[in-house]
Amino acid sequence: MSKEERERGDGKGNGLILEVEDIHTYYGSIHAIKGVTLEVHEGEIVTLIGANGAGKSTTLRSINGLNHPREGRIRFQGKDITNEAPHNVVKMGISQSPEGRKLFPRMSVLENLQMGAFQRNDRSAIAEDLERVYGLFPRLSERKSQKAGTLSGGEQQMVAMGRALMASPKLLMLDEPSMGLAPIFVEKIFEIVQEINDQGTPVLLVEQNALMALDVADRGYVMETGVIAVTDEAKNLRQNEKVQKAYLGIE
Amino acid sequence: MASQARTEPPSQIAALLSRPRPSLVAIIGILVVLALIAWLVANFVKDPAEFVNVFLIGLTRGAVYALVALGYTLVYGILQLINFAHGDQFALAGLLASSVLLSVFNVTDESGAGIVIVAIGVTLLIAMVFAATTNTVIERVAYRPLRQSPRLAALITAIGMSFIVQNVALGFYDTQFQSIPRLVPNSDVFSVGGVALQWNKFFVLLLTIPVLLALTWLVTSTRHGKAMRATSMDPDAAAMMGINVNRTISFTFALAGALAGAAGLLYLLYFTTMRFDTGFELGLIAFTAAVLGGIGNLTGAVLGGILIGLVQEFNEGLTVLTPGGDWTRSIVFGILIAILVFRPSGLLGEQTPEGG
Image (cartoon, rainbow over all chains, first blue to last red; front, side, top):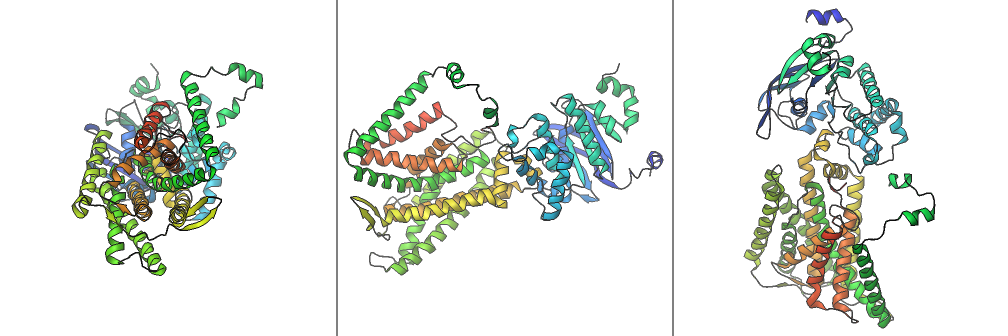
C-alpha cells in the first residue's frame, strides 16, 4: 500500500476492484487507445478527464465489453474480463450510464429503470433499489410513467444514472454525466455522484468538465490522444500547472 | 404527446386562425380519400351482401399478409434490415408443409376430420420450426458478419439470400405448382341474407388471431420481449443492461421465421396451391404492408396487411368503377411509392432507433 493511501486513512484505496493494464483498443481501423493503465479501488471516485476524442469513452467501451482491446488485460475483482461479452460484464457488476444517455425513448421512465435490473432476479432487492433511485432522484418518481424520450436533458441524465444503479453495480461507470446540462443540473448531478459513492459504490467518472470532476474525485487520470498523460490525487491534479492550463481554464 | 398537451391553444378561434393553410398535397390526399369513400359507399349500396363477402375475402387475405409483414417488421425493427429472403422462407415453408401433408399424412379429399386436424396441427408445428431454424441460420451466416458493414452490403446480401432460398425451393420442387386437397372445407360457417363466411376463411382468421395475441403478449410482457424492444431502440444500451444482443437478434429471427412458417401453411390451406416463387410477390406485398403500417411497428404491420388485403380484394371483387385484377399490382405498389413519398413513417409511425 502506498504512502498516500495510508495517509488518507478513510478506508478508501483499499481493495483493488478494477485493473486496466496497458490496453490497446481500435475503433474501426483507428488506434484509439494506445496503452492505457488505470485502477479503481474499493470506495473511490476515480475520474478520467481529457479533451474530446482523447479516448475516454473508448476506454469505458473497452471495460464494458462493447469494444474489446486487442492488447492488454482488464481485471475486475481479480477476474480477467478482457474479452468478456458486454452482458456478462454487467452480470459481474459493472454498470454504466453511457455518453449521450442512450435511454430507451419509447419506454417509460419506470420501464427504463427496470431495464437496468434486467439481469437480476431478486425482486425484493430490485424494489428496494428502485426506492433508492427515487430517493436520489425524486423527480423520477413524479415522471415514472412518462416516455423517456419526452424528458428534458437533465431528467434523462437522472434516468440514465438511475438505470445504471438498478443493476446494483459493484462499479459504476459514468460517461459525461454533465454534458449538455444547465449549470444547476450539473451541480446536482455531481452532488448525487458523491452521494452514490458515499453509499458505498466505487465510481469511474469520465468528464470533460474537469473542474467539477476533480472536485468530487479521489484520484484522476488525464488522457491525451489515447494515452494517460498524468495521473495523481485529484487535489494534486487541481494544482498541477499543466492540467490547469489545458483543462481547468486557469492561466 | 406531452408537448401537444402543453401547447394547448387558448381558444378554438385562435386555433382556427393560427392553423397553417393546408398544402396542395394534403388537399389532394383528402380528395383521394373522399373519392375512395364515395367509391366504397357506391359499391356497398349497389350490393351490400356482396360487399361484405368481398370484405371477408380481403380480411382473410390480409391476415396472411399480416403474418408475413410482421416478420419483415420484427427484423427491420431490430436490425434496420429488410430481410428480402423472408417471403421466400414463407414459400419454402409452405412447400415443405405440402410435402408433409401429402407424403407423411397422405391426406386426400376423403380424409376424415380427425386425421386432418392432427395433420394440420403437426404440419403447422413443423413449418414453424423449420422456418424459424432456417431464418436463424440465415441471420447467423449471412447477416451477423455484416452487422458493422454499411447497410447497402447487408441489403444486397438479403437480396442474394432471397435468390438462394427461392432456388433451393426450385431445386426441390421444380417449377410445378404443389397442390393439396381442400382440407378445410369451403362450406358456410354461417349465411345470413347473402352474407356468408366459409370455413376455410374462418379457419385462417381463427388461427391468425391467437398468433397475433400471443406475439403481442410475448413482445410486451415477457423478458425476451423486453430484450427485443430494448435492442430495437438501442443495441449498445441494451448490451449495457445485461441483454445478450446476439441471442435477442437470433430469437427475433426465429420468431419472424415461425410466423412465416405459419403463414406458409395457412396460404397453402386457403389457396391449396403454391410454388417456388409464390413468396417473391407475396413477400413484396407484405413488405409494402409493413411500410404502409409503419416499419418496425407491430400493430402497423397487421393494419397494413389487412388494408392491402382489402385493397386487393375490393379491386378484384367489387363491380362499380373497379379497375380489376390486372391493376392490382400497380395499385399495391403505387401505394408503396405514395407512402414512401408522402408519409415515409407509415400510418402508425415507424419504430426504429431513427424513427423515434
